[in-house]
Amino acid sequence: MPTNPADDSAHGDLVIQDDDPLNGAEGGEPEPPPWRILIVDDDVDVHVVTKFALSNTHFQGRRLSFLHAYSGAEALAILQGTDDIAMVLLDVIMESPDAGLRVARQIRGELGNDLVRIVLRTGQPGQALEHSIIVDYDINDFWCKADLTTRKLFTTVISSLRAYATLKAAATQRRSLREELARVQKLQAVLEQHALVLTLDAQGRIIDANDYTCRLAQRDRAQLLGRDLHVLHPGVFPAPLARAITDALARDSGWAGDIRTTTPDGAPLTLRCAALAFKDADGVPYQYVAVATRLDPA
Image 1: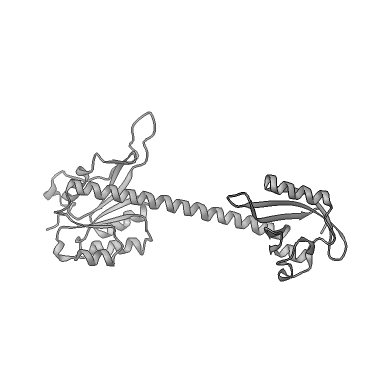
Image 2: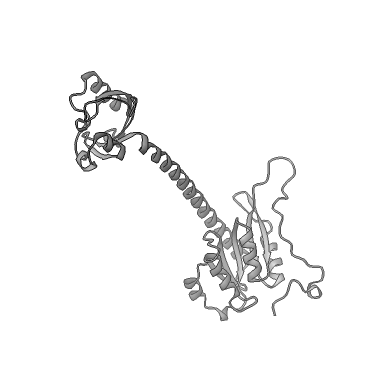
């Protein structure tokens, strides 16, 4: 029969309390945050034995902190309120024969938690087929309690924490990249409204032009693609300016300065420009990007 942690007559004064991760060493360097592990089992003795077996375990300089749940509902409540649980040691059979399996599915589905590592444990392996569970449920390991020695438990926990740390780092990086992309897109949206942006190939032919450039040139984008800059600048560039731009792009991969030209209807036009050269590993330019803003009133 599963033991009930609330049955004081069965356990006397034995109480399993959640670890307090805030109780670090006093003075000196602050203790790094612990790895949170949630033990889910309706047998209080399993909590005691598991915590005792792992009590001195450290990984990457961080100790383990244990949270305790005695039913599927308690486990889900803790997971909903705690966002940094690295691992769940989850009993299969609790308030129902498939309580642990339903919790595993809810963790991935309802809570959308793809990071936490789920290790199923069962005291009655004959009631659940290990292969089908691993295939049908997004879990990370499956053990019969009788086979999970202290050494195997330690190995399972460390490998799970290592996997969680890798996934967490990747998720953090993806979030940072999404935030950076959003910032760049906002800047690009502003730039598109107020600046000419041109992309040129290695031969100086236009391979992309933004809408502002097309409006100023009074041409469709298709009419600009594949043409050189003379499509935007009638006449010949002054030789000193052309040489200065070419030398700067070759030497410094960039040039900035003013260019005086005319609009399609012949009105004077002064552009403050910046150009960048993108080079391959051998230092050969394969693409140029030019950005320009009008100095005279539009």
